[in-house]
Amino acid sequence: MPKVDFSKDLVIIHCSGEAVNAVLSELYVKQESEDSVHIAIKKMDKKENSTAAMSPFSVYTIPLTKKKIVIDK
Image (cartoon, rainbow, N blue to C red; front, side, top):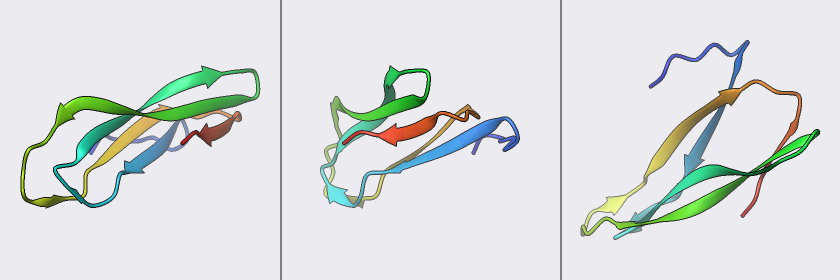
């Protein structure tokens, strides 16, 4: 877990749910304007071959901003 200074950073946690043979995904900044930041989910080509049920998650930090953060589906 990265060190976080909440006076400077915003934390976004992406939980992609439970699945078997899950396709992995990651977040990226899709669009940024003067008043908002749009974050989208990108499916990665790599697929984990496993019979285990997985609940993958990722932790992202971005600089603290007054802009509206929008998660696009």
